[in-house]
Length: 194
Image (cartoon, rainbow, N blue to C red):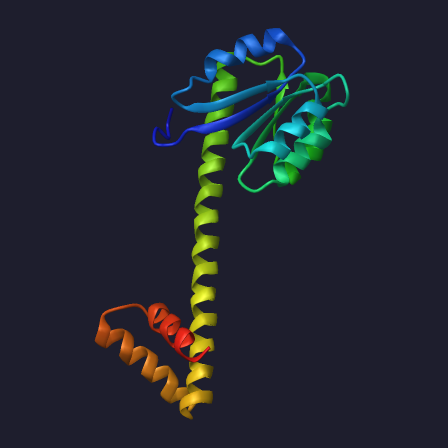
């Protein structure tokens, strides 16, 4: 596997045992864990309620639904990459519907090599999502720090009658003098004056 540091959780939705037998060896536990196999959309929906999966592989059609709507719904979940396998005569139509929603589609029958390539594409997409998740978390943390520092500034303004500029400089100076972050200084101020 290309991304040896990562293990990907996989949900396989397929009503065809032969497909399951073919894909199972492509999902070694060293790279994919846990791997869950279900045979219908209802079971897949329940499984997604219980846990998040990195990959969802849907082998359409399924007994209770075709599977394309479920594939799109699963793709909306944060961090989930979805692969939908459809019969070749339906591929163009289904691909046109699901690709804009972020679902990968493959025509079947497909070769083992193509499936392995699809798994690598999914890993690439998952890693890209992982980077975006980290950036979003970083931005959220920075915004939280800004809110906390602003709250501390307003407490200094209220209780010590500082100007906003003086409160800002006070927090900056304390952080530099103590070799700590502005966040830590702000937390101390909030605890003192709240």
